[in-house]
Length: 107
Image 1 (cartoon, rainbow, N blue to C red):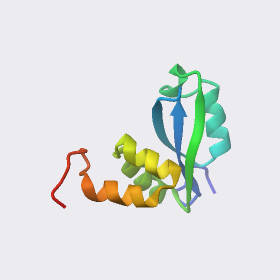
Image 2 (cartoon, rainbow, N blue to C red):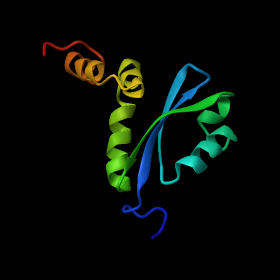
Image 3 (cartoon, rainbow, N blue to C red):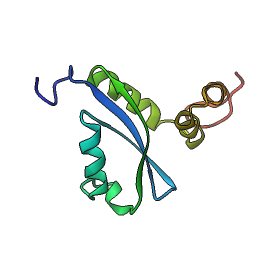
Image 4 (cartoon, rainbow, N blue to C red):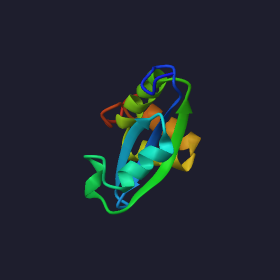
């Protein structure tokens, strides 16, 4: 299969850059992509000196991974931290208490 075929397994990943910024990405080869980030071959992350992989999820195809990547990119820093730490209860509570824009809702 071709690398960019939608049926190739893909990873959604989160990097912590310089211990202060999160970067969410997608790839079909996690090890290669992390090396690219660390070797300054990514336009956004090349500005950072410390790049650490802090989270990843594997999906059976690219389209499912793209949906998850888009979802996580829309999350607050608090939700990303809860996901990374594996705090499912906090993640659920944050999902119930805030809307996509981070404003508290009535629900």
